[in-house]
Image 1 (cartoon, rainbow, N blue to C red):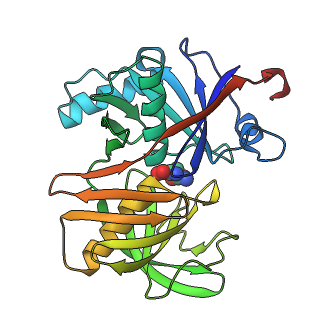
Image 2 (cartoon, rainbow, N blue to C red):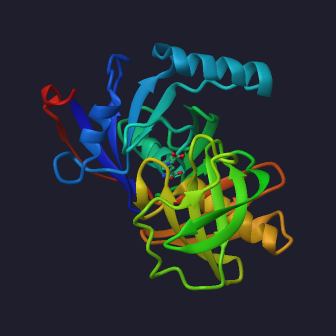
Length: 282
Ligand SMILES: N[C@@H](CCC[C@H](N)C(=O)O)C(=O)O
């Protein structure tokens, strides 16, 4: 089984090209691929499958045409899985890496193309300087909730980015935060789990973010989480639009909030490729 490894601000992924739409990977197989000692190692898996060969993707695009008036011709479906094998609706950094793979493989025009995700169709473009921008759609703020991280209680904003986030602002530096264990959360608010961001505003439209991801544990970056963090910072400042810089352990991301949508920009690189002896997977 052919694979490519890539990352976006050190949120890393195993990319599995599936041009014939035949790869069927169990949660156990995904977890084995993502294991950092006995597998390739990654925060998640991106299966690259043509929309026309995926019943799931065809249904998503049909719904987008019906309900959102989508008229484009997205050709590729990002089938994203967390490191524990569970499915997630959306992955912002993963989508930037997915776009980089498609462009480098000559399968998409870097100037701009659409990708189908479980959260809907998302436009992507790659600038001449290599930065990849994803139109992440409008963030939905759904009130407030709480979390506990290493015994500390935080309150934050519930932000739906297609996937669930709780973005908590703090006046304390986050560099030494222990995010090793899954933060506590309210299952009534987050019945399918949650990605938790602890966010320290450090300047004019600039925040430092740490994140614990549902299904992957602490990661060095999270694209949907970066947008949720910018939304929380904007909300606290009484703003709804503007550009935020989000410092993550793996680098810098830029989030632009507009009245209509949110844009995520950052680097995306491919670092290796090879063949995995798929016979070792269950
Ligand atoms: N790292 C991703 C988010 C991946 C999905 C998340 N763990 C979930 O379960 O919702 C990103 O860059 O957005």
